[in-house]
Amino acid sequence: MKLFDRSPGENARNYAIRVLLYNIINLELAPGSAVSENELSSTLNLSRTPVREALIELSKSSLVEILPQRGSYISKIDYERIEEARFMRLVLENAVVKLACESPEPVDLKKLKDNISEQKFCLEQEDTARFFPLDNEFHMLLFQSVNKARTFEVIQSQMVHFDRIRTLSLKSSKPTKIVEDHENIIYAIERRDTELAEILMTRHINRHQMEKSELVAAFPDYFIQ
Image (cartoon, rainbow, N blue to C red; front, side, top):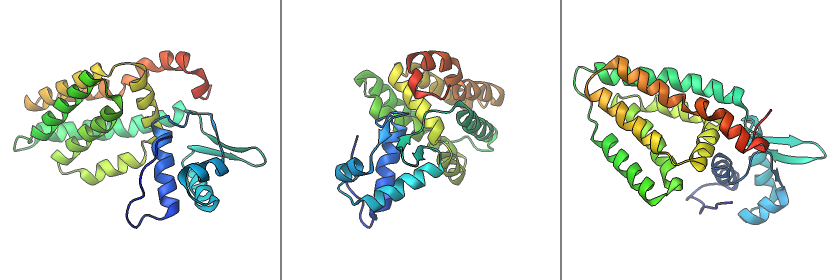
Protein backbone atom coordinates (compact mmCIF):
# COMPACT_ATOMS: atom_id res chain seq x y z
CA MET A 1 0.00 0.00 0.00
CA LYS A 2 1.33 3.42 -0.94
CA LEU A 3 1.49 6.00 1.83
CA PHE A 4 1.60 9.79 1.80
CA ASP A 5 2.50 12.50 4.26
CA ARG A 6 -0.42 14.17 5.97
CA SER A 7 -1.27 17.58 4.55
CA PRO A 8 -1.12 20.59 6.89
CA GLY A 9 -4.38 20.77 8.83
CA GLU A 10 -5.61 17.41 7.52
CA ASN A 11 -7.39 15.46 10.24
CA ALA A 12 -6.81 11.73 10.76
CA ARG A 13 -10.12 10.66 9.21
CA ASN A 14 -9.62 12.61 5.99
CA TYR A 15 -6.03 11.42 5.75
CA ALA A 16 -7.17 7.80 6.04
CA ILE A 17 -9.85 8.36 3.39
CA ARG A 18 -7.35 9.96 1.01
CA VAL A 19 -4.77 7.19 1.35
CA LEU A 20 -7.29 4.37 1.16
CA LEU A 21 -9.08 5.91 -1.83
CA TYR A 22 -5.81 6.27 -3.74
CA ASN A 23 -4.89 2.67 -3.06
CA ILE A 24 -8.33 1.37 -3.99
CA ILE A 25 -8.42 3.29 -7.29
CA ASN A 26 -4.87 2.25 -8.14
CA LEU A 27 -5.58 -1.37 -7.18
CA GLU A 28 -2.87 -1.46 -4.51
CA LEU A 29 -5.77 -2.73 -2.42
CA ALA A 30 -7.11 -5.41 -4.73
CA PRO A 31 -10.83 -5.81 -5.39
CA GLY A 32 -12.22 -8.51 -3.12
CA SER A 33 -9.34 -8.37 -0.65
CA ALA A 34 -9.88 -8.21 3.10
CA VAL A 35 -8.80 -5.13 5.05
CA SER A 36 -8.16 -5.10 8.79
CA GLU A 37 -8.76 -2.06 10.96
CA ASN A 38 -5.86 -3.07 13.18
CA GLU A 39 -3.43 -3.53 10.28
CA LEU A 40 -4.51 -0.30 8.60
CA SER A 41 -4.19 1.59 11.88
CA SER A 42 -0.66 0.31 12.29
CA THR A 43 0.29 1.02 8.66
CA LEU A 44 -1.16 4.54 8.72
CA ASN A 45 0.08 5.23 12.26
CA LEU A 46 -3.44 6.17 13.34
CA SER A 47 -5.84 5.01 15.99
CA ARG A 48 -8.63 2.63 14.98
CA THR A 49 -11.39 5.26 15.20
CA PRO A 50 -10.43 7.38 12.13
CA VAL A 51 -9.67 4.21 10.17
CA ARG A 52 -13.09 2.80 11.00
CA GLU A 53 -14.71 6.11 10.05
CA ALA A 54 -12.81 6.12 6.75
CA LEU A 55 -13.98 2.60 5.91
CA ILE A 56 -17.58 3.55 6.72
CA GLU A 57 -17.31 6.63 4.48
CA LEU A 58 -15.87 4.58 1.60
CA SER A 59 -18.63 2.01 2.04
CA LYS A 60 -21.13 4.78 1.20
CA SER A 61 -19.54 4.90 -2.27
CA SER A 62 -19.65 1.09 -2.46
CA LEU A 63 -15.86 0.87 -2.54
CA VAL A 64 -15.74 -1.05 0.74
CA GLU A 65 -18.06 -3.75 2.04
CA ILE A 66 -18.44 -3.96 5.81
CA LEU A 67 -19.89 -7.33 6.82
CA PRO A 68 -20.92 -7.76 10.48
CA GLN A 69 -18.93 -10.48 12.24
CA ARG A 70 -16.91 -11.10 9.07
CA GLY A 71 -14.86 -7.97 8.52
CA SER A 72 -14.31 -5.40 5.79
CA TYR A 73 -13.47 -6.05 2.13
CA ILE A 74 -12.55 -3.95 -0.87
CA SER A 75 -15.58 -4.13 -3.15
CA LYS A 76 -15.22 -6.01 -6.40
CA ILE A 77 -15.53 -4.08 -9.66
CA ASP A 78 -19.16 -3.70 -10.70
CA TYR A 79 -19.73 -3.11 -14.42
CA GLU A 80 -23.20 -1.70 -13.77
CA ARG A 81 -21.64 1.17 -11.80
CA ILE A 82 -18.96 1.59 -14.45
CA GLU A 83 -21.64 1.87 -17.12
CA GLU A 84 -23.42 4.66 -15.23
CA ALA A 85 -20.17 6.57 -14.84
CA ARG A 86 -19.32 5.99 -18.51
CA PHE A 87 -22.71 7.36 -19.57
CA MET A 88 -22.27 10.54 -17.52
CA ARG A 89 -18.74 11.07 -18.73
CA LEU A 90 -19.59 10.41 -22.39
CA VAL A 91 -22.43 12.94 -22.43
CA LEU A 92 -20.38 15.67 -20.77
CA GLU A 93 -17.11 15.05 -22.60
CA ASN A 94 -18.87 15.14 -25.97
CA ALA A 95 -20.57 18.38 -24.94
CA VAL A 96 -17.15 19.83 -24.10
CA VAL A 97 -15.50 18.92 -27.41
CA LYS A 98 -18.55 20.37 -29.19
CA LEU A 99 -18.07 23.64 -27.29
CA ALA A 100 -14.37 23.62 -28.12
CA CYS A 101 -15.01 23.08 -31.83
CA GLU A 102 -17.76 25.70 -32.04
CA SER A 103 -16.18 28.36 -29.83
CA PRO A 104 -16.22 31.80 -31.52
CA GLU A 105 -12.50 32.06 -30.77
CA PRO A 106 -10.14 29.09 -31.29
CA VAL A 107 -9.47 27.29 -28.01
CA ASP A 108 -5.92 27.53 -26.65
CA LEU A 109 -4.62 23.96 -26.91
CA LYS A 110 -1.01 24.53 -25.81
CA LYS A 111 -1.43 23.04 -22.34
CA LEU A 112 -3.20 20.03 -23.82
CA LYS A 113 -0.38 19.47 -26.32
CA ASP A 114 2.22 19.83 -23.56
CA ASN A 115 0.29 17.26 -21.56
CA ILE A 116 0.37 14.82 -24.50
CA SER A 117 4.13 15.30 -24.77
CA GLU A 118 4.44 14.31 -21.11
CA GLN A 119 2.25 11.27 -21.76
CA LYS A 120 4.56 10.19 -24.57
CA PHE A 121 7.57 10.57 -22.28
CA CYS A 122 5.85 8.33 -19.71
CA LEU A 123 5.30 5.73 -22.42
CA GLU A 124 8.98 5.80 -23.31
CA GLN A 125 9.90 5.42 -19.64
CA GLU A 126 7.16 2.81 -19.08
CA ASP A 127 5.97 4.93 -16.15
CA THR A 128 2.31 3.90 -15.89
CA ALA A 129 2.03 5.33 -12.36
CA ARG A 130 2.69 8.83 -13.71
CA PHE A 131 0.58 8.23 -16.81
CA PHE A 132 -2.74 7.88 -14.97
CA PRO A 133 -2.75 11.39 -13.43
CA LEU A 134 -1.62 12.81 -16.78
CA ASP A 135 -4.59 11.13 -18.44
CA ASN A 136 -6.88 12.74 -15.86
CA GLU A 137 -5.13 16.07 -16.35
CA PHE A 138 -5.73 15.95 -20.11
CA HIS A 139 -9.48 15.77 -19.58
CA MET A 140 -9.39 18.40 -16.84
CA LEU A 141 -7.54 20.78 -19.20
CA LEU A 142 -10.11 20.09 -21.90
CA PHE A 143 -12.92 21.15 -19.57
CA GLN A 144 -10.96 24.17 -18.41
CA SER A 145 -10.38 25.26 -22.00
CA VAL A 146 -14.11 25.94 -22.36
CA ASN A 147 -14.60 27.30 -18.82
CA LYS A 148 -16.21 24.16 -17.42
CA ALA A 149 -13.75 23.36 -14.63
CA ARG A 150 -16.49 22.91 -12.01
CA THR A 151 -18.28 20.43 -14.26
CA PHE A 152 -15.11 18.36 -14.36
CA GLU A 153 -15.00 18.36 -10.55
CA VAL A 154 -18.51 16.88 -10.54
CA ILE A 155 -17.41 14.16 -12.95
CA GLN A 156 -14.37 13.33 -10.85
CA SER A 157 -16.48 12.80 -7.75
CA GLN A 158 -18.47 10.13 -9.61
CA MET A 159 -15.59 8.40 -11.39
CA VAL A 160 -14.08 6.20 -8.67
CA HIS A 161 -15.54 2.96 -10.04
CA PHE A 162 -14.71 3.90 -13.62
CA ASP A 163 -11.18 4.82 -12.55
CA ARG A 164 -10.51 1.32 -11.23
CA ILE A 165 -11.19 -0.21 -14.63
CA ARG A 166 -8.99 2.44 -16.22
CA THR A 167 -6.19 1.53 -13.82
CA LEU A 168 -6.60 -2.17 -14.57
CA SER A 169 -6.49 -1.46 -18.29
CA LEU A 170 -3.28 0.56 -17.87
CA LYS A 171 -1.68 -2.21 -15.83
CA SER A 172 -2.64 -4.80 -18.44
CA SER A 173 -1.38 -3.11 -21.59
CA LYS A 174 0.76 -0.21 -22.76
CA PRO A 175 -1.54 2.82 -23.10
CA THR A 176 -0.38 3.74 -26.61
CA LYS A 177 -3.94 3.87 -27.94
CA ILE A 178 -4.98 6.32 -25.21
CA VAL A 179 -2.29 8.76 -26.30
CA GLU A 180 -3.31 8.32 -29.94
CA ASP A 181 -6.93 9.03 -28.96
CA HIS A 182 -5.88 12.25 -27.23
CA GLU A 183 -3.84 13.39 -30.24
CA ASN A 184 -6.73 12.66 -32.60
CA ILE A 185 -9.21 14.56 -30.42
CA ILE A 186 -6.94 17.62 -30.44
CA TYR A 187 -6.58 17.30 -34.22
CA ALA A 188 -10.39 17.34 -34.62
CA ILE A 189 -10.73 20.38 -32.35
CA GLU A 190 -8.05 22.24 -34.31
CA ARG A 191 -10.00 21.51 -37.50
CA ARG A 192 -13.16 22.64 -35.68
CA ASP A 193 -14.77 19.40 -36.83
CA THR A 194 -17.48 18.74 -34.24
CA GLU A 195 -18.70 15.48 -35.75
CA LEU A 196 -15.21 13.97 -35.89
CA ALA A 197 -14.36 15.18 -32.37
CA GLU A 198 -17.50 13.54 -30.95
CA ILE A 199 -16.82 10.28 -32.80
CA LEU A 200 -13.26 10.20 -31.48
CA MET A 201 -14.29 11.06 -27.92
CA THR A 202 -17.00 8.39 -27.97
CA ARG A 203 -14.48 5.77 -29.07
CA HIS A 204 -12.07 6.96 -26.39
CA ILE A 205 -14.56 6.83 -23.51
CA ASN A 206 -15.96 3.48 -24.69
CA ARG A 207 -12.56 1.87 -25.10
CA HIS A 208 -12.84 -0.08 -21.86
CA GLN A 209 -15.92 -1.86 -23.27
CA MET A 210 -13.76 -3.34 -26.03
CA GLU A 211 -11.41 -4.70 -23.36
CA LYS A 212 -14.08 -5.98 -20.96
CA SER A 213 -13.93 -9.68 -21.85
CA GLU A 214 -10.11 -9.67 -21.81
CA LEU A 215 -9.95 -7.99 -18.41
CA VAL A 216 -12.57 -10.26 -16.84
CA ALA A 217 -10.77 -13.32 -18.21
CA ALA A 218 -7.40 -12.08 -16.92
CA PHE A 219 -8.66 -10.97 -13.48
CA PRO A 220 -11.83 -12.97 -12.74
CA ASP A 221 -11.56 -12.49 -8.97
CA TYR A 222 -11.69 -8.70 -9.36
CA PHE A 223 -15.21 -8.56 -10.81
CA ILE A 224 -18.77 -9.14 -9.72
CA GLN A 225 -19.83 -12.01 -11.98
